[in-house]
Image (tube, rainbow, N blue to C red; front, side, top):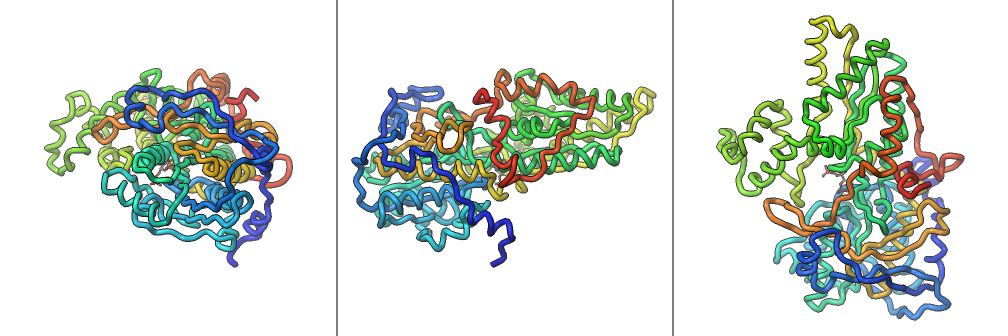
Length: 539
Ligand code: FBP
């Protein structure tokens, strides 16, 4: 095969299963749940799902569950995240072991595959080459949303014709919202198909008390941190460049914050802080400028700046502009003549008009099927670089800046999504798949598989299910109010941000660069998870 030595070695890696999933179990339940917010609206929209209790997998002498074979479908939805293959392996192995004779169908190309009825039957041989490997290529992913009446009917017809007992949706906040909508719909239509979600996204913004982290975050942050660490040493060696690094992660700055904790850059912008302090674009630029000027005074005309891709959406005046654009784009197509601009408020119009033309164009790009601005396509790092450079030019002419300012820009995003999963992600995803199998066999629907106690050794991890409605609230999308899973943003009083804020001024001027190196699968660094998880769990 074309596999590298390391890929082959990873095929042999034996994932560790939490003890509670190894033996016979029973499900115990917590009290009824509510929603993240807008509970009346969520209760009205999800009459069958709302209020379900938290489910906990507990050891039991023997299982009372039926071992009649199950037919289960699985779909990978949205952006790639390391470990997706192991979720599928976890479901497959669970079914093989506990309900032999079951069939696992993999829908091809994301939720579109459910609507079109396109699938592959997952067998042991088919699955084997994907174990512990990165990517979603086993069945591919897609960003379609199952939304309209017609699309719901298409999904219904597929699950009916395959006689599915269950469907596992591996996705982020939007895809799990969609999973909940499907669970409710299937139940109301009298179908037996139960729906279970799994928390996937490198962004790390799908989390709650019971779902401590989404899979793929750990691996992506480790890959980006390796690259940032290398760039840092390069910058210090040549001592002539500032590297502006934009990092993926959508709205939330979790990825950026974790990479900062791993590498200690000179400047780290955190979107949530910019929003909380209502910092204007000018104030954000002034912060960067100030550090560059101070470093120059100390003889350092180089450095590394981390910028979350979602920053643009947090700068107050731009976030208002984006909200207005979202409503406009939901109704009109944007013409060259700029007719549509009359629908902007005067304030937003002046903000729009002073932005560089490239950013204007990028802000007008089509929204994704869930109504999100495609922040990965907006080159905010270049805009900041240019703004800082322009100010420094003026300062130079005035004689108040004597240093130099040469820049390189980078965007690290896609390179972090399909790497070989870290040991943490490999084990976590396998456990999530196993848990999804356990929840399905127990007859549950409308739950997200949740694996917890993640800072303890893997054997001691716990497993259960969190009702999807408990994670939801109402938000404005595509010009309409919609139920969605609440995004977990960086909390400014949370442990990761607090730890960072205590040291960032020192990192700014003095070089405290830390190079974590590549992901390790063996040796002293192999089983480290990430600072965000450890700090949030109080370790
Ligand atoms: P989801 O996991 O939420 O689907 O998104 C992950 C992500 O990588 C984001 O960080 C990024 O903004 C987006 O996908 C990019 O989308 P695309 O792959 O469609 O370019």
